[in-house]
Amino acid sequence: MAVATEQLVRKIVNMLASARRDGVVPLHRPLIGDAECAYVRDCLATGWVSSVGAYVDQFERMLAERFGVGHAVAVNTGTAALHAALLAAGVAPGDEVLTTPLTFVATANAIDYCGAVPHFVDVEEQSMGIDPDRLGAYLERTAVQQDGRTVNRYTGRPMTALLPVHVLGCPCQIRELAAVAERFGLRLIEDAAEAIGSTVAGKPVGGFGLAGTVSFNGNKLITTGGGGAVLTDDPAMAQRVRHLTTTAKPAHRWRYDHDQVGYNYRMPNINAAIGCGQLEHLDDWLADKRRLHERYANVLAEVSGVHLFEPEASVRSNHWLNAIVLDAPDAGWCGRILEQLHDAGVLARPLWTLMHRLPMYGECPRDNLPVAELLADRVICLPSSVGL
Ligand SMILES: *Cc1c(COP(=O)(O)O)cnc(C)c1O
Image 1 (cartoon, rainbow, N blue to C red):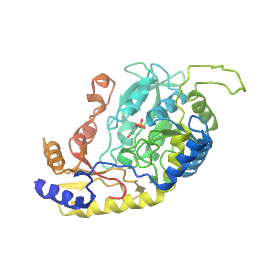
Image 2: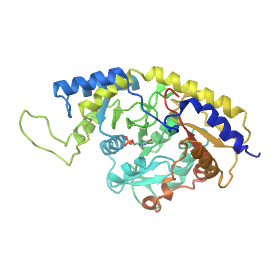
Image 3: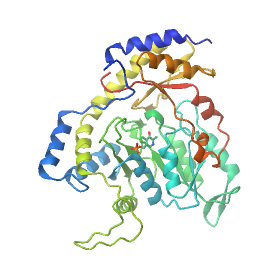
Image 4: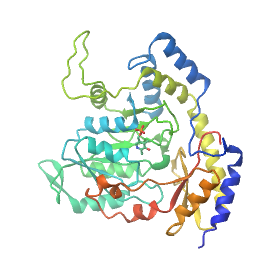
């Protein structure tokens, strides 16, 4: 069916007319409230600005409660959270980690930082997350058990972990993926960077595997300026993450010992202070995001050839970014729409370049990736700030 490009652009531009600031509507703009300002002033006034302080502890407690997990460890980026979670899960140099090609580059980079190799598997169209059925069938053909380990029969490398992503805030089929991970002896780490507040059957994503990670970068729903966290129910896992992210220094009143190569990944108190204020808004902002999603749904319902990225009924997305999906592939469509939207000051953007098309990951092992490759040129992310 032909896509009414001009009608689509006009409807989106009209819908966002009152949201312009300096002539443009950005993709995402952070909102900072009075509580955040007060807590930061408190840090400045007391001198507790750096990597220890009461706000870090409070933020971790609030996160653990929000995600329904036993432990949250706050760190300085979402990327650091992924790196620390993979290391603490035992991902070692020369291992392979199964992941999605349809993600922000940090997911694959964190695997590479461990000396491990990303191994890309395909997604399914509705959630844009890893397809559990295809993954199971692929592992049947690709994985063998050797001395209690799961090994890639073609490369000979151990396959140690599965790292799915909840894309644009929409939960992937995490319960089904957890079952596949269990069947093949893979440790499950969730990249929930974009998905704070999203749930599957009422349970927050990020809490389904051995660990989950979240980001508090300025473009995410909740920001600490920069930041991230590792979430886990496993006390030993939490302890390893805490140790690795604080230069692997055993606690002692005065001694500076380090028992392995560690990282300086802790979240400063001043950032955690912002996070404590931000979390107070989360439920209001989730409701606001849902209303924005419904407005986009109404606008797009009248346009043929496209639909709004919509989770299936049993899951709840935080709708971090709303996205238009073109019903059928059409070469050059994304570029045409993006040009017209940008000319009109609407700063929409495409999905990321697929990971296996980036120069550093082009040679990584992978299944056929037909769904990801078709989706990559059919999706446009729309401005989705709270308060639009
Ligand atoms: C934002 C993001 C990250 C990394 O978070 P940073 O805080 O920017 O390091 C990782 N994965 C995904 C899917 C993201 O969107």
